Length: 209
Ligand SMILES: CC(C)(COP(=O)(O)OP(=O)(O)OC[C@H]1O[C@@H](n2cnc3c(N)ncnc32)[C@H](O)[C@@H]1OP(=O)(O)O)[C@@H](O)C(=O)NCCC(=O)NCCS
Image (tube, rainbow, N blue to C red; front, side, top):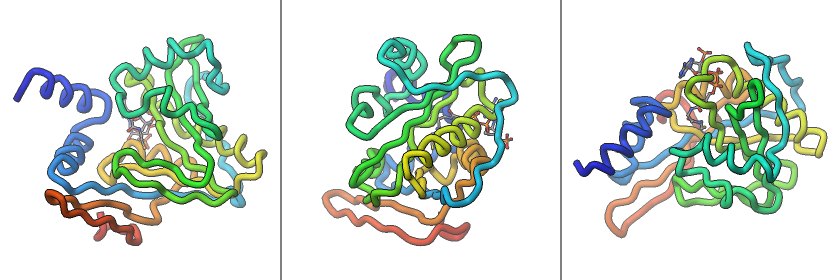
């Protein structure tokens, strides 16, 4: 294994855990899939609060350096790619320090980079992505509190359904998103062997992960 490969493995292990490393290995072998989760905004939002005081606000231009520092190893979520029309980022700070971010994307479709596929969106739907909490601040309920705050803001803009995607192995994300009312409804993926490839979407369930 080259040094950069070991470093990359370590980066992923440190920020996402062993199960995500496994999912990435399968992806590298040609089998990629994600759970699609959704949540109706017609349902009441839970009173989910972080266990420590956090201040939430939209990402501002002056936050850019803090954002890049927070996501220094998260190559998948570069700021410039997300800053398109209709996309916005909610931030959470603890004592002024940026510790967590979460994106909402709107438009005709959301790009799922991992699968190299577009997920069609209706006008009343938003796609949430790029959830990231600094490792030292995980387990304090910051991500679920941010989801609820983001959903509240989106609902005020007329959004009635939110969708997001995550690896079936990412139990931390599944637990965090469940606290905000998200449940898996489909498994979306792609099998690629050489030049042959096939995409699929099927109902989510334990037998389908
Ligand atoms: C997924 C993620 C955003 C959750 O953020 P969070 O602010 O820690 O959310 P929560 O506090 O609700 O913790 C969720 C789960 O993480 C796990 N967890 C708890 N403490 C943890 C810690 N110190 N380190 C790692 N995970 C921890 C627990 O399973 C927890 O669920 P529980 O509270 O029901 O036991 C965060 O783990 C993260 O940034 N992961 C890497 C990026 C990623 O996978 N993003 C999701 C893409 S869909």
